[in-house]
Amino acid sequence: MEKMSSTAKLSIEGIEEIILSSINGNMYITKAPETENEISWETKWKGTAKDIEVIKESNRLIIRFDDKENFINVFGVVLGKSSGDMISASIRIPEKIKILSMNTVSGRIDFNDFSAKEKIKFSNISGEILCEKAYSEKIVFDNKSGDIKIIDTEAKENIRINTISGDANLEKIAAKEIKMGSKSGDFVLREATNKIEYQKISTISGDIVIYNSAGKIEATTISGDIRLTHKENKNIEWTLNTVSGDIDVNSEVVFNAEMKFSTVSGDYSFKNAYPQIIKKNHFIFGSGDMGYLSVHTVSGDLKISGKEQVKYQEKKQSTFEERKRDAFTVEDRISEPLEPLEPLEPLEPLEVSEKGETKASFGERIGEKFIAPDENVLRIIDTCRNNIITKNEAKEMLKILQYNEKEIESFMKLAENDEN
Image (cartoon, rainbow, N blue to C red):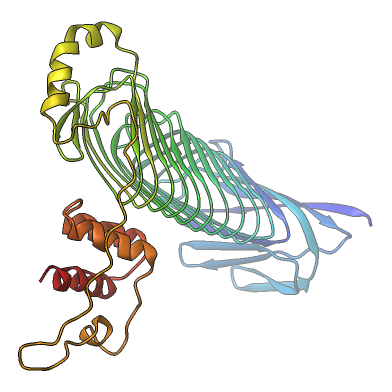
């Protein structure tokens, strides 16, 4: 089939927002020369048919590169109609607008070297998004089943990423805040800058990998792993949660941080990291002035690796041995993983009250709608009952298992009733 191309341009005088959309076609976005005040595009089509709809609504400009019958509407004037199958659209836009939105279905968005004053938004249903050198107050990525790659991009406020089955790879990113939610995609951040103050990453089955981690990080995954690399002596404030995934923290400097670790059946191990044991599952590495880690797992393991400290180890050996002897356990848990917890005895059957009434079952006590606790829930409750973890820690773990507040309160009542 013969391929055809067409070009067009349009003044953006008075325009503050531009919306671009396409079906079954790729979009290539870049900035126009500073002297231009026009948006221009070159489209390539299968065959001779072309289909472009242009609509102006007040200060908003909408351009649709669709492969269906549409009227070509230029500022309210109908010029005709056509249908076609677009292969690609190369679009140049002046950097004078406040908001730019791009929407594609079964196409790719390739974005290079452009800034908008307030917001840039990418939306794709089935296709990849490649963003390089984007600058704005806020940048949003929504992708249902395609991968996202973001390079050398800066948002003065925040970057938000939402995916269902696509991975997100970020490199050389600057923003005060980064948030990502994903069902089955991985999140990888390389060369994070000092401008990143807060990251909140949540996945169901994807891995979370952050290089040069610093600042405040909240990372939660159900079955994926969390891997953080720390390269500089910066302040850290990390909350890391997994159900069955492992957590690996690798520090390329001397690891000086305070950590609290709670788990149901996971182990921990330390390499070139020598903590004081303050109390059960509460540690201070070195001076502890680097920051704080709060780590929770259900069955996942924790590993912390630090920079080798031969001189420190020799100097502090005797004190360290004393701390181990005075710790809450006689086991050497610094070099060896935790022994698995002994299975708990089954709960005693409910007894008849003094009045001769049979005590209600747990399901009856919490109401007609009863969510039966699964194996992980029972292990968390039993661990809490035996004072291995606190009630708040148990609730946090149940949240990781995606139970709502009402269900969590019901499960916690079971633990309270068994205590009585």
